[in-house]
Length: 169
Image (cartoon, helix red, strand yellow):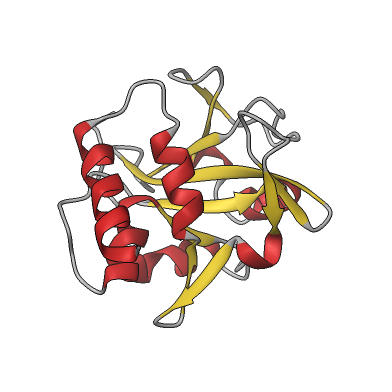
């Protein structure tokens, strides 16, 4: 399979049908927050609560869904519950030639979101998402937390962090 052919923002909801409990994440969310394109984006990321992930995946053709389990390895989804250790799901194009969407799974517990690396860090679901231009976008502080706490940070993540500090602060 070829690398990424990122799904355009306007094509996300048609792929997900009636499922609308998602938010834009990653570099594209920073672009929306800042009101301009800041860099080229190699993928399109959305976030979904673990309590909603089954409903989300059921609207996508099963043969297009791959769990990152363990991280770095892709396993076709068999339709069963997504294991708690999985926080990353990749969606293939309809023809199976490239990846088009990455789904980030956020652990939740009732009305709280739990940080995957340390559940003692948590926040309310109400503060998890911001509305920007009619789109649900991940709270930039949550984006910052995830990008800053990566074991191996890519240059694009360093630039995203700099932008968040300088332009959203």
